[in-house]
Image (tube, rainbow, N blue to C red; front, top):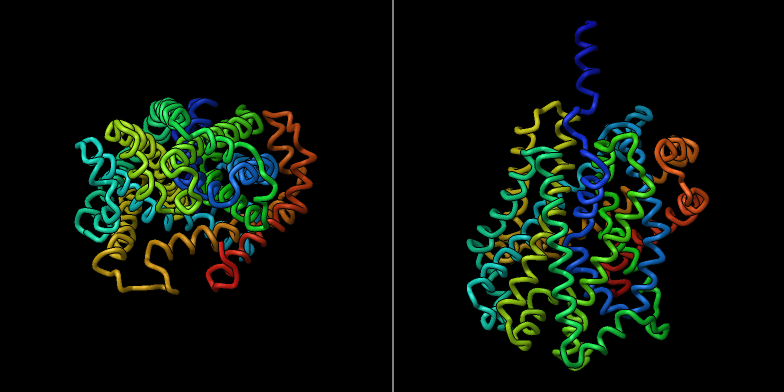
Amino acid sequence: MENQNKSAADRSKPQPKNTFSGNLGYILAVAGSAVGLGNIWRFPYLAAKYGGGIFLLIYLILMLTFGYTLIVSETALGRMTGKSPVGAFQSFGKKKWLKFGGWINAVIPILILPYYSVIGGWVVKYLFEYLRGHAEALASEDYFGGFIADSLTSEICFALFVIATFFVIIAGVQNGIETVSKIIMPILVVLALITAVYSVTRPGALAGVKYFLIPNFRNFSLMTVVAAMGQMFYSLSLAMGILYTYGSYLKKDSDIEKNTTQVEWFDTGIAILAGLMIIPAVFAFSGGDMATLKAGPSLMFITLPKVFDSMGMANIIGSVFFFMVLFAALTSAISLFETSVSTIVEELGVKRLPSCLIVLGISLLLGTASVLGYGTLDFVRIFGMQVLDFFDFLTNSLMMPVSALFTCILILRMVGFDGIAKEVKISSQFKRQGMYNFVMKYIAPFFLIVILLSSIASVLGWITF
């Protein structure tokens, strides 16, 4: 019996290899998690749709307050407990709501990874075609719809993306995640700078720069705030269990507050560069036509290829852009995969390699359903949505706000502000402690409820984004 208890205790401890080598590895890994399709794809089209500069201003305010609070919370709880989300929540008791709060955090990345990898597969396809010199074909109005309706081609591209992510994960934290992040993130920044400079120097692009960077309060609306909150949530990898997991790999001498600030600005810097890459280019292409600018999710796969085709050197610019998007998508997929694997290892007692294979199998199964939802199973609708759109709505609009609410409740009812402060101050001054306490107690729960209710109202057709 004593040996059994000892074995159980040993399994509950974080594995020694599951640590980052230092602050740089952690910062680049978390920044890589945050800098994904949310920045390169989602941020520009939301900024364009919801007021340009005023959207950017509101986003920055929310990121520095609400975003900062949740990043610190999840990271501190992960490091405090040495656990991914399920274990972190259950470290504070055996109540049912604690178990539910941990598992909803843990399940989200398992559900996001498959459909995220499908979109990553679309990026693979576009990069391949640009490298082949097919910019003119990609600019065709019907190309994207025809491609995603071709289930076999789309499945191959999706499988390539998720298998590439798998091979990074089986290498472990330092040899896999950290090494890849240290290589990819600097390249991503360089490519983003090159593309942004090219974009803003196009004839007519200056109007797009002004629209994106200068706030115009006449463009403000309540939906601007709601959209900015939702984007911040998505972009910073909040409420996905990722920061719990990466926090559990963080050494006690790592400065949580400093790391959080660096991740905030790195993530926002890439989002601003993405806006400067896309919005001025669309202005130059369309002459400032707002209908073109507000193309929404289709902006990257339908509108931008037309923009590149109109610029000259379309194959070169398209290749550089989609290389960058692929790197961004891969770093985020790595964090989703790692968080899923960590949960299976800790909670089910499965070794790392079999856990990786389990996550790969789930991803291939659910991802294939999303692929077929645009092709063979195009007739299938869930609450009026195609399969991929349903998974996106379920995770981002419903589960993530609920997940973050449970983090708030955990801190307010079980851990306490003193508990968080004690953990952060092991290695940090916690200069924003007063703001943290105020936002966590009054602002964060309110914002999360607003996001949840507005998402439900939107899918029911009561409001329109």
